[in-house]
Length: 157
Image (cartoon, rainbow, N blue to C red; front, side):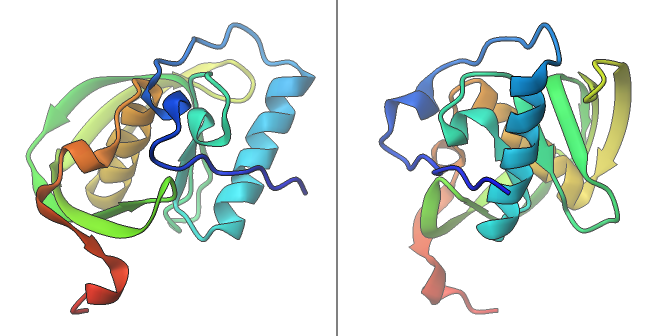
């Protein structure tokens, strides 16, 4: 189990575009494993490689639907509908804001064996996929927040 340091807002690496992954080697396998460990330790539901300082198009997601998703070189092919709700980020600790995202997405990616697959996602999983794919383009959710960015202790839930 290797926990990596999560880069925080203000770190220049979070604003850079990531490079495509061309092969699954030992180093990339270890990165995926470390990303899951780091995400779980931080109690997150998704993590993109730049958040741990690596400019590669790799995303891991676990929205507690019984699946662990690994998306390598993900490309969103279709978006439909909309959902507006609270969103946070491990790279923006202690904050959340209201963001509108598609309610449905269809994404094409490679799995850990570098096999292409398509995934259809709705609701929370669709939100997580969009959020993590934005990280690969150097974009943070704070730029999409409607209204103010709030402290987590201000939640009314």
